[in-house]
Image (tube, rainbow, N blue to C red; front, side):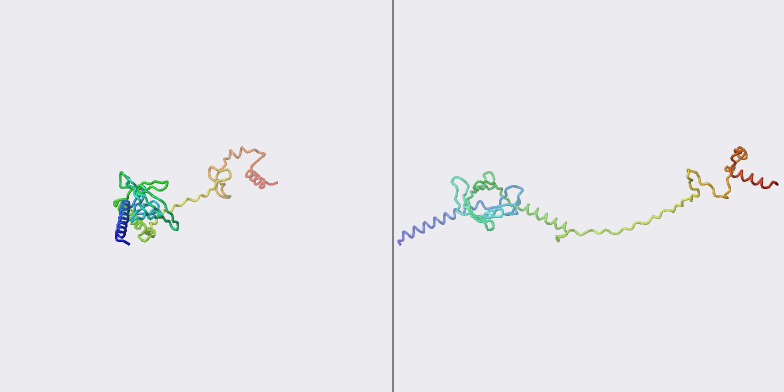
Length: 230
């Protein structure tokens, strides 16, 4: 084997190494953390409602990751075409993806076969603010729950004894006369003296019908007849 051939082989190997280093340098600008919308949480990588991350040639998506291989720079474009070797659990597949920088900001445009997405770069300030908000929410939850994950202790109020109030006794008068059948007063008992208003006048006794004397008149007549001789 001639010396010229060895020199040419070393020269070709150097060019290949330089090409690999150049391709690796081309992929470096895409490294970072990105989110699809402002509602996404930059601190949650690879989770639903979180963000995605590109670091050291590894794309971390939602519940999946892809190794970015065989980069090819697109002519006259700030874009790179990759062969993505992806996996999600036990499932593995390969597909192409084009990455380019957004023209108006530091965002990322990513094209898959039939799909296109635009991501906003998560800045350090945004990640710190979200981390502080999450820490504050955890502290507040621990404070409300007693700090040990348990519900707050119940507050036992002291027993208050109210003074006893004694009401004055009220005596109800006794009613002796009960209402009669027709709504009037009950007739006095036998032998009880009658009032002045209840005594009948002699005129009223004399006006009685002779054929129908009352019980008191009949008794008087029998008493007079009993004392006369036959």
